[in-house]
Length: 360
Image (tube, rainbow, N blue to C red):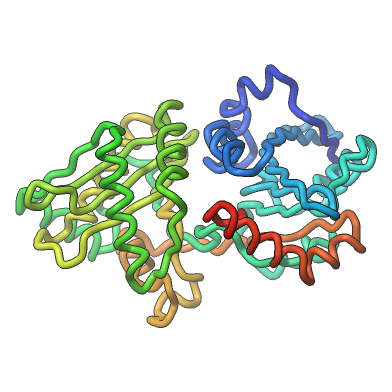
């Protein structure tokens, strides 16, 4: 285990936040970005920017922390998609540095949720358990996800696709299906949200946030030059939509939706392929995260709510990664017991009633 220090980022480091996050050992994550911090600041969270530096002088890790005050208990920290580490063995040292920072500055934090992009394994779970990090429920939809390697030329990447996806792309091209990157107008955002709502009505049973949340999200990432929206059309109306993000050298399929019973075969595949190749050309992405599948051992489980989504996404790549998911660092055992046994459930219910939005 390496020793780390933890401190709040300087104003200059915050101004350069995206450059610092994408220089992290694992290349950062869009949910650690300045754009995402901006969105969450308007939806009940206080962004805190932490810098973790190894005592041995190695590479630092910059991590976004979302803070929310819980009446009667203190502050909860959520280190979303972090800490970003080169190896799971670095997490105990970062956790100890977090505890020291909270104690020394009397920050009144009773627990820290961490969510590192570390592949799940017996070894990784053992390292986290020995650091007294408690496994909690997963929060993000891509704690199991399909990832396509894009660090090659377009023809090589196309040939690497699973045959179902590759054949669908080629057939859509032959039959004249077209994909457009569209401006982020109010009309287009409303159309996109409507297409997303059709997914929630299906087997995936996805609960959408409000239109205002997505509009703020899409706008923040587009303003930063990181996000873009695509449509295909049928009968003059958008029939498939996707919002994708390039953050550093990683691409992500963030949001999507489609009309049921469409006539164009392969339209959703061609839309994804167009977005992927655009991000390869414009941003040099080396991987593309399809953002959410069933766990790798449940891909064939037709009862899983993400079965249909997984079937589509694994038609591009069979590389499905299970991350270790959310673990809690307990800083105040007594307050954490209250939180874990009753207060969290109540806080989440009250937040949904008051705002109509998920707590996290």
